[in-house]
Image 1 (cartoon, one colour):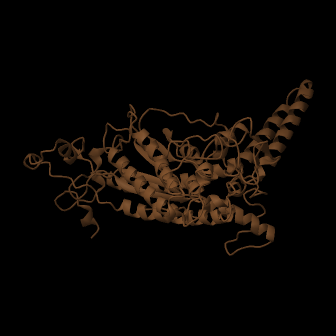
Image 2 (cartoon, rainbow, N blue to C red):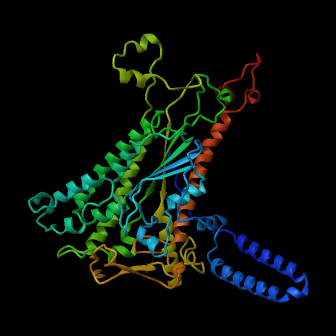
Image 3 (cartoon, one colour):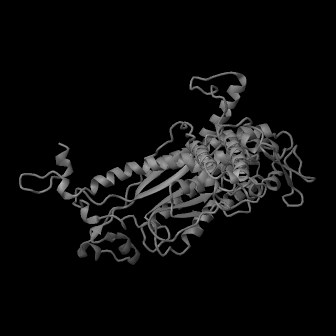
Length: 519
């Protein structure tokens, strides 16, 4: 089953600001009641408190930040401490990053240093956070498959007339080479090759965040070739996902989660009609943001020779993003409906007929305290990252034009506090950077960065990534989506763990089955 996020929530309250002012007022009055010989010190303290309250309110009142955002701001270097204590939630992230995943260059100029998946971990109080998304030096990222993209580049050689239709694509391999980062398929293989933790988690959330930088590269290819590549690499992706699903059932694999560790199995009804509740195998696949809507798509993209153009590639990017989402959603619908593996009869006479040792082991039922463990329940969750970003951009544009749509967009005084929703705060400069065609020499000596005077007023921090507040908002909204999804599962588990004394009984004193109770 797939769950979609509703429309954006309203702004959080300013309780933290009011509490700070009340605290300042309380301590000030307490000092004034003290001895008069401390009057000079009191005067200085009062002045500092008033000035601090002014700075605090002027900066935060317009932002409407929640206490959770304040907690995120206090992180040290954006790092999350992984606690190998077992149990709890583990979040594993694969992919190439997106509009809410900052690069190392962003950190170096005082920008965001945490991604939305790290915010997600904090908001869900996860015990372990394993990001396999490579940290890029600049605005770039990994793709699904380096080998498939390299094969596509070979199809752009002048000898392949069937693909090129007589057009010159010899410039592609030089300006859009294979990324120097481990692709998503390699990330998954590296994860599965890792040793299992000493204490496995209780649950795992698998995040597959891809498409953003794939479209950046694919938009330069002939559209037919790029479309076929999306379909091929999606098949490879779900093939790897199914491998993770199978590994998650093996207690000697790093993918294993001990879902039943803290469950009172004696209180669970485990009759043939009511087996153990199925462990969730949750996969979160965000919809990719259309990279052609970022400021960097125009400024940083190579200007191709005639008859190619940036406009043509912008149309390709919009089309490919839509096609990407459609292909992934179709594959997700098929993946969640894959039938469970049939559990073979564990009687010795049946098992003795199986000669292959590996097949024999796979047919034996996994047991927990003597109870048969069912296969994990496939659960796919999707979230549209572009929904929030586009709404902020449209809100600002409507307000500037003095218009209001039927949903009320354009009626607020500020668009989430942003007065600038297109120009990024940070822009690359340097003697070897050409703003007209996006060519650059990615070395520290050749590129410098200019930073705006009012970073908090810009929606985009760089040409491809959004600001710190927007990153937090995205991570927070995804966390609320996951919580609502998990709450539904928890309600079913709670029902299955009701004590037998709370279940209605028949005339003979035995517990009635649920199908009888529903009659």
